[in-house]
Image (cartoon, rainbow, N blue to C red; front, side, top):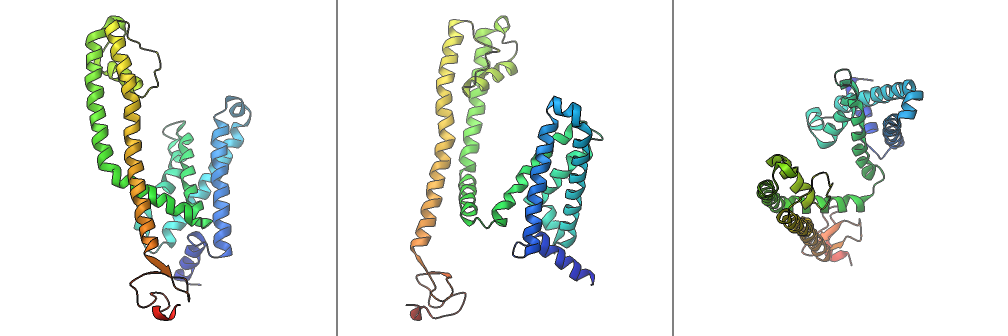
Length: 275
């Protein structure tokens, strides 16, 4: 078997889901990902780490080596390796194996292997959950359409946080725990997000009034980006429904066609003969 045939066979196993070997590989990959995440989570428990650290390390390295081999096989078999390497899944695949090797230089970094959970996004393709994929695409389009509005909104919030942080620093001062403007900005962010850790609290009546106003503003600030994304989602859903209402399916092959079509773009059957 020559090199091209080997690459083609590996490609259909790794990237394809329409064969028994491809489905088996994908299901095994999902199992390995879930197992590796479970191992990392269990290792972080002090009692388990004390008694089973050796076994955890062995499993982590076995799984990481398997993922490393898989990563290089994906590069080797892909028709355009650079495209895979720079793709979303390619970067996630790389990030899922790097933490283990980087532990030689930065101890404890292997816990970041939980990024492997993102690889489970492939489950939608593997199980052919088209409705999930379509909904994810709609959300992606809505977020892209909202990007500029949300960016402007975040910049406005950052400006507000800076101003309020400076004001509360002047009003309260170091004697009440607001020892610097950066620390006061931290308090403003914590308060405006309605979290309120309580590690720093205004002591003067003026500071408490400002705090109350900031907390009330927090509810409005949380609602704004939600509304922006919701509007864009509605637009996306409306456009999708419009396209659906302006189309029909070919009786011969099931291909979706526009109402103005004269022939089926898939099987070539004349539209007038579809009825």
